[in-house]
Image 1: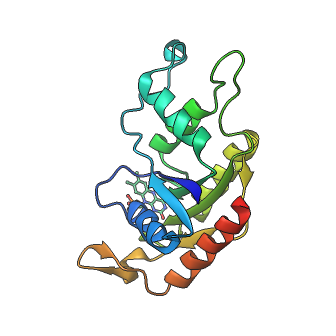
Image 2: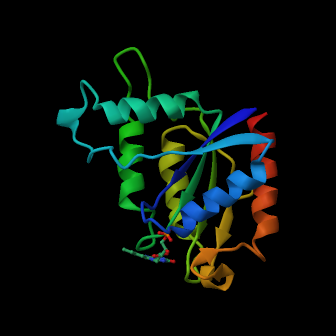
Length: 180
Ligand SMILES: Cc1cc2nc3c(=O)[nH]c(=O)nc-3n(C[C@H](O)[C@H](O)[C@H](O)COP(=O)(O)O)c2cc1C
Protein backbone atom coordinates (compact mmCIF):
# COMPACT_ATOMS: atom_id res chain seq x y z
CA UNK A 1 0.00 0.00 0.00
CA UNK A 2 1.17 3.51 -0.78
CA UNK A 3 2.14 5.66 2.20
CA UNK A 4 0.68 9.16 2.38
CA UNK A 5 1.89 11.63 4.95
CA UNK A 6 -0.78 14.22 5.79
CA UNK A 7 0.45 17.64 6.82
CA UNK A 8 -2.18 19.76 8.53
CA UNK A 9 -1.38 23.46 8.57
CA UNK A 10 -3.31 24.08 11.77
CA UNK A 11 -2.23 22.87 15.20
CA UNK A 12 -5.64 23.77 16.70
CA UNK A 13 -7.09 20.84 18.66
CA UNK A 14 -10.44 20.84 16.82
CA UNK A 15 -9.01 22.01 13.50
CA UNK A 16 -11.42 21.52 10.60
CA UNK A 17 -8.43 20.79 8.41
CA UNK A 18 -7.30 18.04 10.76
CA UNK A 19 -10.82 16.64 10.71
CA UNK A 20 -10.72 16.77 6.91
CA UNK A 21 -7.45 14.80 6.98
CA UNK A 22 -9.09 12.22 9.24
CA UNK A 23 -12.02 11.97 6.81
CA UNK A 24 -9.52 11.36 3.99
CA UNK A 25 -7.85 8.67 6.10
CA UNK A 26 -11.21 6.90 6.42
CA UNK A 27 -11.95 7.20 2.70
CA UNK A 28 -8.53 5.81 1.76
CA UNK A 29 -8.98 2.87 4.18
CA UNK A 30 -7.48 -0.11 2.34
CA UNK A 31 -6.34 1.91 -0.72
CA UNK A 32 -3.49 3.78 0.97
CA UNK A 33 -2.09 4.36 4.44
CA UNK A 34 -2.47 7.94 5.67
CA UNK A 35 -0.55 9.14 8.71
CA UNK A 36 -0.95 12.65 10.11
CA UNK A 37 2.42 14.30 10.76
CA UNK A 38 2.92 15.71 14.24
CA UNK A 39 5.40 18.53 13.83
CA UNK A 40 4.57 20.60 16.91
CA UNK A 41 8.10 20.01 18.25
CA UNK A 42 9.83 21.56 15.21
CA UNK A 43 11.49 24.81 16.35
CA UNK A 44 11.33 28.18 14.58
CA UNK A 45 13.64 27.99 11.60
CA UNK A 46 17.00 29.55 12.35
CA UNK A 47 20.05 29.13 10.13
CA UNK A 48 22.17 29.01 13.28
CA UNK A 49 20.38 25.75 14.21
CA UNK A 50 20.72 24.02 10.84
CA UNK A 51 23.81 21.89 11.49
CA UNK A 52 23.40 19.53 13.15
CA UNK A 53 19.67 19.60 12.52
CA UNK A 54 17.44 19.41 15.61
CA UNK A 55 16.13 15.87 16.28
CA UNK A 56 12.55 16.94 15.46
CA UNK A 57 13.67 18.14 12.03
CA UNK A 58 15.57 14.93 11.30
CA UNK A 59 12.46 12.96 12.30
CA UNK A 60 10.06 14.88 10.01
CA UNK A 61 12.54 14.85 7.10
CA UNK A 62 12.76 11.05 7.41
CA UNK A 63 8.94 10.70 7.40
CA UNK A 64 8.65 12.98 4.36
CA UNK A 65 11.39 11.07 2.55
CA UNK A 66 9.79 7.70 3.25
CA UNK A 67 6.30 8.80 2.15
CA UNK A 68 5.11 8.09 -1.39
CA UNK A 69 3.21 11.37 -1.26
CA UNK A 70 2.22 14.30 0.92
CA UNK A 71 -1.33 15.52 1.31
CA UNK A 72 -1.42 19.04 2.69
CA UNK A 73 -4.58 20.23 4.46
CA UNK A 74 -4.17 23.94 4.81
CA UNK A 75 -6.08 26.62 6.64
CA UNK A 76 -6.07 30.15 5.27
CA UNK A 77 -4.62 32.87 7.47
CA UNK A 78 -4.75 36.39 6.05
CA UNK A 79 -4.94 35.14 2.46
CA UNK A 80 -1.89 32.96 3.00
CA UNK A 81 -1.12 29.56 4.42
CA UNK A 82 -0.27 29.40 8.11
CA UNK A 83 3.01 30.38 9.71
CA UNK A 84 3.54 26.94 11.27
CA UNK A 85 3.27 25.34 7.83
CA UNK A 86 5.66 27.91 6.32
CA UNK A 87 8.12 27.18 9.13
CA UNK A 88 7.96 23.44 8.39
CA UNK A 89 8.41 24.03 4.65
CA UNK A 90 11.40 26.27 5.32
CA UNK A 91 13.07 23.45 7.27
CA UNK A 92 12.19 20.87 4.59
CA UNK A 93 13.48 23.16 1.85
CA UNK A 94 17.05 23.01 3.10
CA UNK A 95 19.53 20.34 1.97
CA UNK A 96 19.82 17.55 4.52
CA UNK A 97 23.63 17.63 4.23
CA UNK A 98 26.39 18.54 1.78
CA UNK A 99 25.66 15.30 -0.09
CA UNK A 100 21.93 14.85 0.50
CA UNK A 101 19.42 17.20 -1.15
CA UNK A 102 16.24 18.64 0.31
CA UNK A 103 13.39 16.17 0.65
CA UNK A 104 10.59 17.96 -1.24
CA UNK A 105 12.08 17.79 -4.75
CA UNK A 106 10.02 15.41 -6.88
CA UNK A 107 7.67 14.66 -3.98
CA UNK A 108 4.08 14.11 -5.09
CA UNK A 109 1.74 16.48 -3.26
CA UNK A 110 -2.05 16.94 -3.06
CA UNK A 111 -3.64 20.11 -1.69
CA UNK A 112 -6.90 20.55 0.20
CA UNK A 113 -8.33 22.99 2.69
CA UNK A 114 -11.46 24.12 4.46
CA UNK A 115 -12.57 27.45 5.93
CA UNK A 116 -15.68 28.66 7.72
CA UNK A 117 -15.73 31.67 5.34
CA UNK A 118 -16.27 31.82 1.59
CA UNK A 119 -12.63 31.48 0.56
CA UNK A 120 -12.22 27.73 0.97
CA UNK A 121 -8.42 28.24 1.14
CA UNK A 122 -7.98 28.79 -2.61
CA UNK A 123 -5.71 31.78 -2.08
CA UNK A 124 -3.63 29.95 0.56
CA UNK A 125 -3.28 26.99 -1.81
CA UNK A 126 -2.09 29.27 -4.64
CA UNK A 127 0.72 30.48 -2.36
CA UNK A 128 1.54 26.86 -1.49
CA UNK A 129 1.75 26.02 -5.20
CA UNK A 130 4.22 28.88 -5.67
CA UNK A 131 6.46 27.80 -2.77
CA UNK A 132 6.31 24.07 -3.55
CA UNK A 133 6.94 24.64 -7.27
CA UNK A 134 10.04 26.63 -6.40
CA UNK A 135 11.15 23.55 -4.44
CA UNK A 136 10.47 21.38 -7.50
CA UNK A 137 7.75 19.31 -5.80
CA UNK A 138 5.40 17.35 -8.06
CA UNK A 139 2.02 18.94 -7.30
CA UNK A 140 -1.22 17.30 -8.35
CA UNK A 141 -2.89 20.44 -9.67
CA UNK A 142 -6.15 18.73 -10.60
CA UNK A 143 -8.14 18.18 -8.52
CA UNK A 144 -7.40 20.49 -5.65
CA UNK A 145 -10.10 20.69 -2.99
CA UNK A 146 -11.35 23.97 -1.54
CA UNK A 147 -14.21 23.76 0.93
CA UNK A 148 -15.90 27.05 1.98
CA UNK A 149 -18.69 27.58 4.53
CA UNK A 150 -17.43 24.82 6.84
CA UNK A 151 -20.16 25.48 9.40
CA UNK A 152 -22.75 24.12 6.98
CA UNK A 153 -21.09 20.72 7.44
CA UNK A 154 -20.53 20.88 11.19
CA UNK A 155 -22.78 19.10 13.65
CA UNK A 156 -22.17 19.44 17.41
CA UNK A 157 -18.77 20.99 16.72
CA UNK A 158 -17.66 18.08 14.53
CA UNK A 159 -17.08 18.16 10.81
CA UNK A 160 -19.55 15.82 9.16
CA UNK A 161 -18.94 16.01 5.45
CA UNK A 162 -22.14 16.03 3.40
CA UNK A 163 -21.95 18.06 0.16
CA UNK A 164 -18.15 17.90 0.09
CA UNK A 165 -17.81 14.16 0.68
CA UNK A 166 -17.91 13.18 -3.03
CA UNK A 167 -15.21 15.76 -3.83
CA UNK A 168 -12.91 14.42 -1.11
CA UNK A 169 -13.53 10.88 -2.38
CA UNK A 170 -12.66 11.97 -5.94
CA UNK A 171 -9.49 13.67 -4.79
CA UNK A 172 -8.42 10.64 -2.74
CA UNK A 173 -8.97 8.38 -5.73
CA UNK A 174 -7.07 10.76 -8.03
CA UNK A 175 -4.14 11.03 -5.61
CA UNK A 176 -3.81 7.25 -5.24
CA UNK A 177 -3.67 7.07 -9.07
CA UNK A 178 -1.17 9.96 -9.17
CA UNK A 179 1.10 8.04 -6.79
CA UNK A 180 1.16 5.26 -9.38
C1 LIG B 1 -4.96 34.71 12.03
C2 LIG B 1 -6.14 34.22 11.23
C3 LIG B 1 -6.33 34.67 9.95
C4 LIG B 1 -7.40 34.19 9.19
N1 LIG B 1 -7.52 34.58 7.87
C5 LIG B 1 -8.44 33.98 7.08
C6 LIG B 1 -8.45 34.23 5.67
O1 LIG B 1 -7.66 34.97 5.13
N2 LIG B 1 -9.38 33.59 4.91
C7 LIG B 1 -10.27 32.72 5.47
O2 LIG B 1 -11.08 32.12 4.73
N3 LIG B 1 -10.28 32.45 6.80
C8 LIG B 1 -9.38 33.07 7.61
N4 LIG B 1 -9.34 32.78 8.96
C9 LIG B 1 -10.33 31.86 9.54
C10 LIG B 1 -9.86 30.41 9.42
O3 LIG B 1 -10.22 29.94 8.14
C11 LIG B 1 -10.52 29.56 10.52
O4 LIG B 1 -10.06 29.99 11.79
C12 LIG B 1 -10.27 28.07 10.30
O5 LIG B 1 -11.12 27.37 11.18
C13 LIG B 1 -8.81 27.71 10.55
O6 LIG B 1 -8.56 26.37 10.19
P1 LIG B 1 -8.64 25.15 11.25
O7 LIG B 1 -10.10 24.98 11.57
O8 LIG B 1 -8.08 24.00 10.50
O9 LIG B 1 -7.84 25.55 12.46
C14 LIG B 1 -8.30 33.26 9.76
C15 LIG B 1 -8.10 32.84 11.08
C16 LIG B 1 -7.04 33.30 11.81
C17 LIG B 1 -6.82 32.76 13.21
